[in-house]
Image (tube, rainbow, N blue to C red; front, side, top):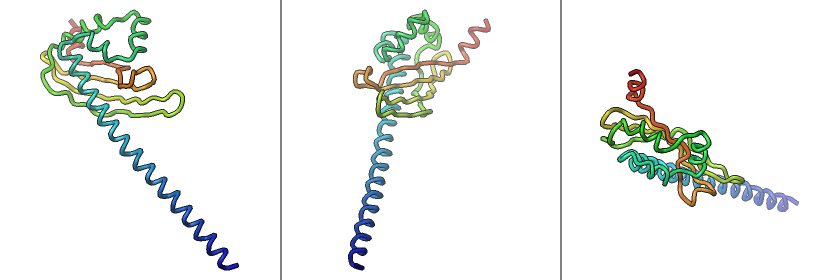
Length: 163
């Protein structure tokens, strides 16, 4: 009977160690994949901001934006052209864009999506700009990350309002 319990004990220990090993592997895999997605989205945020603000071309923003963003803008009576009339006052991009991750989240299930929020800083000809950008990858994103939020704050805009 003693050997029976020894065998059961060994089997239980092997099962527990196997589960712990699988859990550790899953955690490390998730952590590494998350770091890769963070690098990818940060590079995309910088790329998108450079493309959009280098010539302040609304078509560049439309091309990179999620379909729901344009729909919401239309519902609220806004257009990319009107928005860019304000943003163009910053002038051309003078420096590299630096972005810092604010929030990153994924949902696996229904709906499945990945969101990444960044705050970015850039220097333009006529002032400094702080850009908030949110990127999403979901079933409507056609396989790539798209912009769901783009907001640029600058002291220049405050000065223009004071005039």
